[in-house]
Length: 163
Image 1 (cartoon, helix red, strand yellow):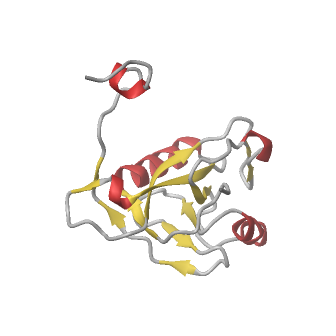
Image 2 (image 1 turned 90 degrees about the horizontal axis):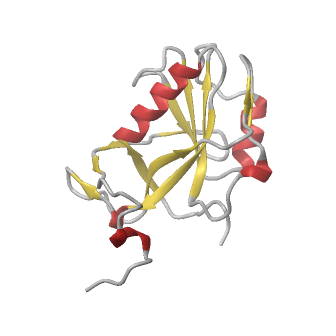
């Protein structure tokens, strides 16, 4: 199984998009970069009707060693964990443009199905999703209900027997 999967991407969870927008604003004037991770829609709860079969972007992985400046951000490939369920990248453009650069297009062609560019002022109207070919793609924002699971609770660790 590879780092990036090929099942259809149905949308992005609203809470995940809000995290992206806030993180991009907090990182300004430097670029932010992260990996997008998705879960199977069948494993998620939706406030509206379930969107069908495929994956929903639910997480952003911030990779240790990522470098960023006012005009670039670079991930350290050797720091990316294996089998993360990654489906693409997200990064910001402090310049205010959501158009991909030539370097963005090279990254898109190597790193998954969906790529989000968020532009200054980092609000719900200042982002665009692209395909691996650099073509704009509609990415619906979905109202996903996240479960508040504590990974250290015995029932979530796998270390304790269940009745």
